[in-house]
Length: 206
Image 1: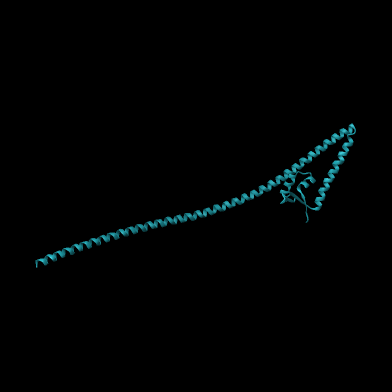
Image 2: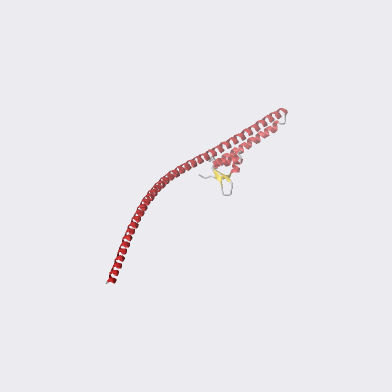
């Protein structure tokens, strides 16, 4: 479907809305449009929609023009002046009513935007919660793995201590055996030395 692009400000003029209201309706998806690269907000309408809002604007202007003419004619007499004042008051009230309706429409549009933002934030919060739960589960798994590693390290440390104790005992036993052997060697050397001395004494006697 082909669309006609008009500035949001023009659409606001045609529909007697404020520019902010038009922008809010675009943001809420009520109107087709967007802010383009030139920084200007645009509304996209079909040819029929554009002709319709132009027709509404022209009809409203004709009606206001006709009413204004009738008021001017009525003001020529006292009774007419009173009627004109009354009708002018009615027109002001009608305009105020229309303005309030536009403001209410704008508020509803803002509410729709806020609801969409709230829905988006709620989804983001749910995703963040899910991510946190996954992180917590991962942390639990890591903690269990760390606890298992620490337990294994403690077991290895205990085993190492026992092996060191056994090695120390073996070293002490070895040193004791070496000491005994040294004593035996020393005793043999002393015995051998005594025998040599005895042989030398006997040799001298002969």
